[in-house]
Image 1 (cartoon, protein in one colour):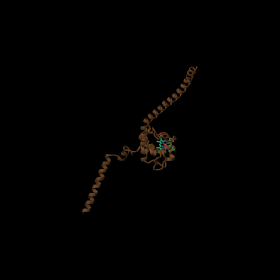
Image 2 (cartoon, protein in one colour):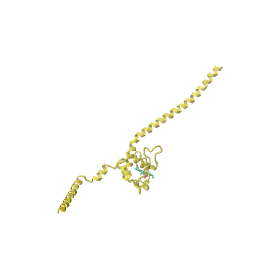
Image 3 (tube, helix red, strand yellow):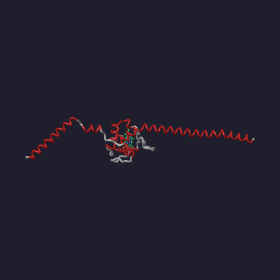
Image 4 (cartoon, helix red, strand yellow):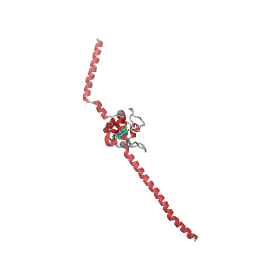
Length: 187
Ligand code: HEC
């Protein structure tokens, strides 16, 4: 008798739970997709960079992107130039489009044969997105530094060649003067 009552009670409570959770589900329609949209998987730009340049291999064995793409701070040698430069891709396309591109790399004819059977995982896509974002944000500063270095280089080259020319000129003008003075002194 007691066993039956407990079972009934347990049944009733779980039924209440179901009703209650149904009510909650009505209040918040499609909670999972909303959450997924509001909170994309966080990505780490440093891991993204390593995935991009191949220091960390892709889980499913896809080729590193650097073979064909360049992106911002990849050092003096940079990446490949077969594909478009990724430095400004985040600014040009924005968050959602980047994720769409990264989740279907096989929609690009050149990348299809490499990634069709070796897609990037959602986590890898997020790391890459974070990397592209960081690169796009750093780009203006980097461009300024590059420009300043270029300007400094030009100034140094100018000063150096001016110095060379000046020295030659000095010798040309001074030598005869000195010789003349010496001759006069002797004579
Ligand atoms: C075999 C060379 C190659 C490799 C490796 C490669 N790509 Fe590409 N990618 C290309 C080429 C070429 C294009 C231009 C579209 C085309 O011709 O397919 C492109 C296009 C893209 C685009 C679209 C750019 C735009 O403006 O539309 C994105 C994004 C992209 N690649 C990301 C990546 C990422 C991320 C990786 C690494 C997981 C990667 N690619 C690896 C060659 C490559």
